[in-house]
Image (cartoon, rainbow, N blue to C red; front, top):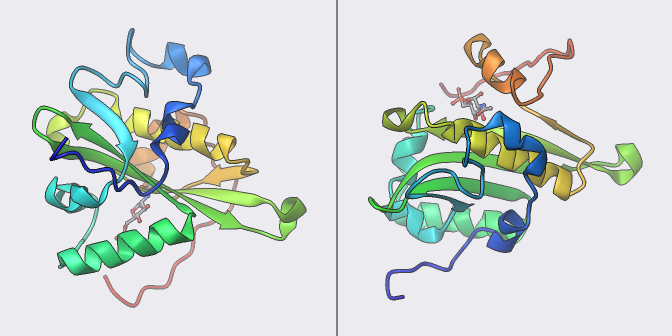
Amino acid sequence: MGNMDHNFLFDPSILADLDYSSWKSSFRPGVSPHTPGQGFKVRPLCASDYDKGFLQVLAQLTKVGTVTREQFMARFNAMKDDKSYYVCVIEDLNKREVIGAATLVIEQKFIHSAGMRARVEDVVVDDTYRGKQLGKILTVVLIMLSKHLGCYKISLECTDQKLPFYQQVGFKQDGTNYMVQRWET
Ligand code: 16G
């Protein structure tokens, strides 16, 4: 018990209750988001993941920079209070390390009957754990979570190289363009 962290970003029962039966044939036999493989667990981000390599995994996606424990906790608490951030991780339970992460952000709208839009952000799997369908598992978790939360659509930005990966789980290009201005690289 002593080393168990219960400071979850969001209620883990939300993930536990999702139904993935319609995805059964998309995964290898026996594999699903509830059973992501021997020694792996999908769960909400925890405060203690600062010490479990969460930021080091994110650094395989893009620049993370310096994030002190205090900065991490302030952002974690702000996201938790906001209730719009669903950061999910995969832990290697034997190593007690975060080896993958993906975030669903919920945006509130006036359009679509005061509806909600879901955005997929910061999907990354440690490169030593590739080929185990872990990225696909995380993405399917976010898709089913967005449906469960009642969003009218889910979207993401990705490189050309990642298009086949997201197409295999149902994302389509719809002719809209992603545009950006940057003040920092
Ligand atoms: C990718 C990510 C996005 C992330 C960005 C970071 C997915 C689906 N897309 O576009 O969420 O924030 O890379 O790149 O994971 P940046 O550091 O150049 O903004």
